[in-house]
Each structure stands twice: as structure tokens, then as C-alpha cells.
View 1 (tube, rainbow, N blue to C red):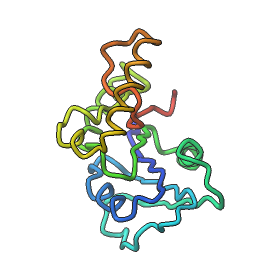
View 2: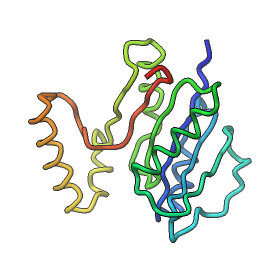
View 3: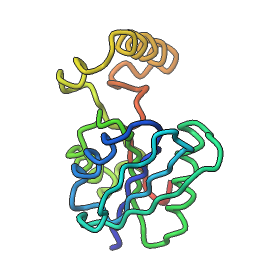
View 4: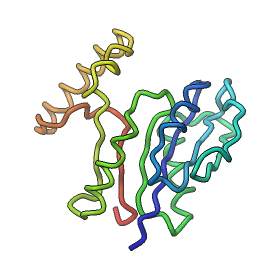
Length: 167
């Protein structure tokens, strides 16, 4: 069974943090697509050959926002028919990438085609968030839970997820 995997990273103004993200990507990942969303802060110079995965950089000529960058990354990654599992993470190092193993377990077992990560199980991540962002996240999470009825979902507003090719 083909289990090739990739990570898609929309990039905008995160500077050196994106390198921290790359260094934390687990060994089960074969490809990383970084979508430079016309960032005024360029992706830092790095010898991408130090990584065990292939790094593909896609550049936008105009800023399309995180959603546009994410779509571009998925479209580009879907061109590679070897890839079966796709993970979207942010470039600001707020996500625990060791959790990709858990996300992939659910995808491989075929109990799920889409899995959502949770940034907020670790108190240190919460403490690093600016107060306004924490408050906004809490309010948006409450509204999302209230509207959907999914009260058990933690951190529903984050962009950390995995999805199978079939989905």
C-alpha cells in the first residue's frame, strides 16, 4: 500500500520560524510544499538537502491569503500521484508536528478520511499566543461548537489537519 505523505505549508512573514517547522517534520513525510504567498519577508536561505524529504517551493505573484496558499499547495501536491496523505500546517511553529503520527494512524486505518489536529493540548503553545488571539480563538471555538453541536472537538478553528487522497 502506498503511504507517501506530504506537508503543505502556507508561508507569509514567518521568517526563520518556517525553518523550525521544517526541522520538526517527522520521518514519515516524503515531500513538503511551501507556498510563498508573496511574502514581504522571503523564505530564509537554507540547504534543503539537510532534510530527509523533498522541499518544493511554490510562489504566488500576488497575495491570496492563507486559504489561497493552501489551495495552491494542495493542487500542486495532488499532481504527484504517489502521495496518499496530505497534512496542512502553519509556518509559525505553533503546531506539534509529532502529532502527525497520530493523524496518519487514523488515515491509514481508514476510520477517517479527514482528521483535525489540536494545538492547544500543550499549555506552552497557549502561553505563546498573544492575549487577543487567545481570546479570539476561544470565542470563535465556542461559536463553532454552538453552531455545529460538536462540543467535544478541541481547537476547531486551527489549520492543522490531515486528509487522504480519496477525500
